[in-house]
Image (cartoon, rainbow, N blue to C red; front, side, top):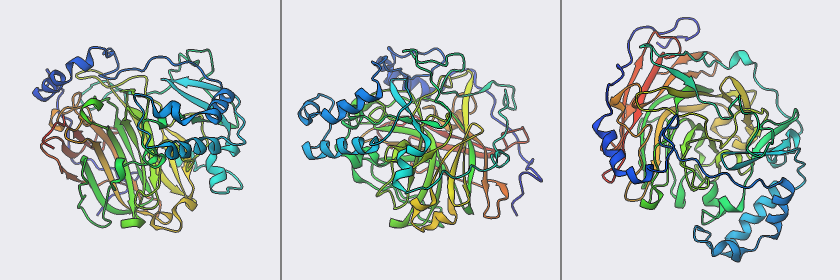
Length: 471
């Protein structure tokens, strides 16, 4: 019988693996493979991520005017353009024009090369898309059950929160405040420059490139593999209203020249099956095509109501209602975990509250997917499966997942997720009882799950691996 985590916490297992004294063989091999690519990388405090160059600041009005005047030929002939044809380009252009039609922007700012526009809460695209008459009230903060982040793990190793906007640097490189005024929310600017890295508007939106569909069967521990997708994950079949994870943040290298596409660590809350499959997802992703060749990991959300036929990253299709100034969808982080050094993480929680799927990030309710998005499907009532783990997409070679080291490397070398619990349909929270799955053991593994009495760790596991060509 499962235990109520707020009445009688689990305390029956130990212990994090001791921090290793040297980098494992798999890490050495990975670094050798990608050594030339890492020469331009900032190593200090940022793992193996490569920051994009500072872009020119483009005022919102100029951005809209430039989009309206954009010519397909100018984009189709670019060396990095993947746009299928003029018709596909025009669909992208019209989507952007419609997204910002009638929107008043108070000011804009730039975070790691991406513009964010401060849009009045009631003018954001999801309000129009779903015909919302008002913004839903957020759940009480007391229901955001993420634990206070400990400064160390059970062995005394340093753990710190991964921040997006440095509190000591509240302005961007152009002198703009990196915070929005009361009554407005920061929306990631959707541009033709980014969209043109994809063949169609649908490919830009979708989680699964080139039309493949990730399939999860409800009430089953089988996680069918899709060509090009590889995973390490844990799973539990249980009716739920969401749950929580603290995700350890890394930036595994994604070699796009070799056909690698993205690598991520995330939570899934899944209901239904087939074309009726519905999900709420959150985590971090390294996806250079989506973020203008930036090799940093970025905070992301995703949701589908119809088996991945629709849905989009980071509210780019206007399916998420943002209510908070924090939790910049699509933004990278100020710090990343390093091998043998300080570990950085963030907490993320979904909660189905009063008919809407609310997202909590670092102790703040950021916003919600409206219940009407799910068209009366399974996730209007509850999800049926919880999953936590890593995912990557490649062609003949796949990128590292997690830290890029094997899960057996343990704390300080392998990526982890911790403080894992779900919320039952009655609103009671329970520690997860997860089953590990290693669908691609030649490239990625899971170690755990484990339990611990250490505050905030509770249920946790290690994830990922080096990837390669034999996955």
